[in-house]
Length: 270
Length: 191
Image (cartoon, rainbow over all chains, first blue to last red):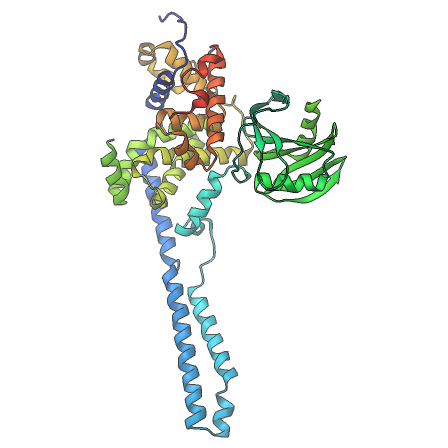
C-alpha cells in the first residue's frame, strides 16, 4: 500500500514524466485492426484521386484549345485569301471559327471537369491542404497584431464574468490615430480585447476606424443597438460605447462569444 | 525512434514506412485524442482520420523529425473540432480516475509508480482541450513556444498564455501554491 505523500513541486520534469507514463499505459484498440482500416481508406482515396484530373491535364487542355484556335483561324484566313468565293465566305467566317473553338473548349472542359464532388474527393491533395488549415483554425481569429506592453495601464478588472482572466495590458499605437489602452482577457476558449480611448469625447466613428487600424482588421456591419455600437472585425463581433467621457470597445479576438455576451461583460467595468 | 530514422521514414512515403510510423505513433496519438474525447470508439475513428490526413499531407511537413508533434496537432485539432461539432464538452462522461479507467487493470504497475506522477497525470487529463494540446506539445514533444505557435497557427502570446493557464490549473488541481506553477518558466515560455 502506498502512503499518500506530499506532492512534489510542479516542475517541468514531473509534467513530462506524467505524460510519458500516461501515453505508455493507455490501452489503445488493437493496432493491427486500425492499420488495416487506415490502409483501406488510403487505398479508396487513391482510387478516387486517380480519376481526378491533375493540374497539368488542365493546362494541356487549354494549350490544345489554343492550338486549335490558331489552326482554325489560319485555315479561315487561308480560305478567305486563297479560295475566296461567296460560298467560302459564307461557310468560314471569324464568327464561325470562334463558335467552333468555343465548342471545342467546352468539349475539352467537360473532359477535364472534376467528377461529382464527394467528401472523399474533397480530401484529395489540393483540397486537403485547405481543409487541414480550416480544421486547425478551430475558431475564427483576428489577424495577429503586435502591441507593446502598456507602461501605465488604467485599472483593468482582473477577471470578467469569473471566467476571463486579464492576461496583459497593452498599448495600441498603430496608425496615425491616438494611442489606446488595451487589455487582453483569456477564457478557456475565448480571447477578448478591451480597449479604452485616451482621448476625451472622441468621435465614435473615428474611434471604431482607429480600432480597425490598430488590430489590422477594418470594422464593418456597424450598427447601433441598445446604446452600443455593434460591429464586426474579421468576422468577429465587437461593440463600442461611451463611458466616463471616453470611448471603450470590447471585441472578440477568438472564441465563441456572441454580441449579447459581450454586452453583458461591459457591465464588469463598473 | 531516432530522428534520422524518422526523417527517412517520412521522406520515403511507401506503405512499409507508413506502417512503421503508424506503429511508432499509434498509441500516443490515440492517447491524446482519447484524453480530449473521453470516448474510445470516437477516439479510434479520429486517430485513424488523423493518420490518413497526415499521410496524405506529409509533403507539408517541413521538419520530418517533428512528425509526432505534427500528427498530435492534426489529431488534437480533429478531436477539438469533433467536440465543437457535437457541442459535447462534457468532462464527466467518462471519468478518467484511477478507480475506473481501463489502465487500472495494471494495478501492480501503477503501484510501482509514484503517486505524484499519477496525480499530475490525472490533473493533465482534466485540462480543457486547448490547454492539454499545448502541454502535450511542449512537455512531451519538446517543442518551443514559436514551434507550437507555428503548428497551431496561433500567436506566441496565445501559446504562452495557454501554457501559463494550464500550469495554473494543474497547480490548483494538485493543491500547490500557484507560484510553483510559474516557478521555472514564466508563462510556460522556454528560451
